[in-house]
Length: 410
Image (tube, rainbow, N blue to C red; front, side, top):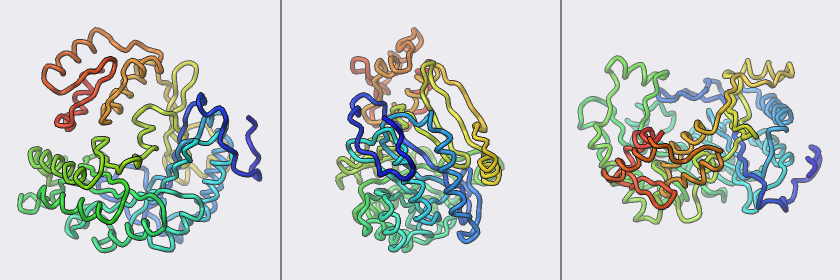
């Protein structure tokens, strides 16, 4: 199938869709109004009016054209992450989306899921409708919480009312909507200011009843190269204890399932048919093309796969594109055993677990080493792993131990 020109209409669904491999596209928008103290993504503070919206869109499109040999397969999803992509002018984001669709070999017969991450401080009714008008069909709103003291602790620019207004605006635009929440947050060392499980449940229920189709409820992860990481090293970062966190996790899960959500991945809940297709693609090992400053991508080849990363700051990224230099900033070859370990680590996050034997076949490596068989038996005897034929999954009451369980299977 010939790649259409930039002036051609969006290509029809590829008739070979049953056997053309699926692929997603991730576009990184690196700017924020304020960098959160827990964030270790490549993000840079800048006012909206100081961003070259069109210039950045031009650079991403130029990179897309330079990556045509890597952009092979049936396009399933496009995800604009950041940073704060809701700062990007919708018309310029729309130009990037149009280019991605036009250059695809084929489109998913279920339609392409197109997500934009949004902060409440940069999303209102008119802007949500503008995103919908350029082809975005899913908005992910970073609510994070509905308590002012916790929002301030997390460095957020919005208040609870603004968070709820942004979710309502997203829903009113007619697209699918996800809301991000952070659970188990401590704003001080006194346990009386730690989020109680009942409060986490209340916040999740309030957001669910707005009509969202998906909720992501995350625990705080302390990354070393962040402000919170620095405080943690000095013993100055308050954290909720493991027992309270476990209770919060389980009670939040129960409350959302009672409201019709499926707890399909450790941190993610969806109404029927509303899973995040883009994130599921990561968890099951699909290829994804990364575009933009600091973006990662993973592409399979006849000899395994490779992962790459673009230049990690906007100035360097834009200068390289301007100079026609499209070699990745970093590139790593991934062999079969390495790919399978990643598939285990990510696949076990899903409720269904991982079809280990099928994954090993796709990675062209051995499924059952002696060490993996032994670890599987030990984990099954302790109730932390279930084996069903060639598939492995973790019972939900052991989900909080997923990282350790996955590592034991490496």
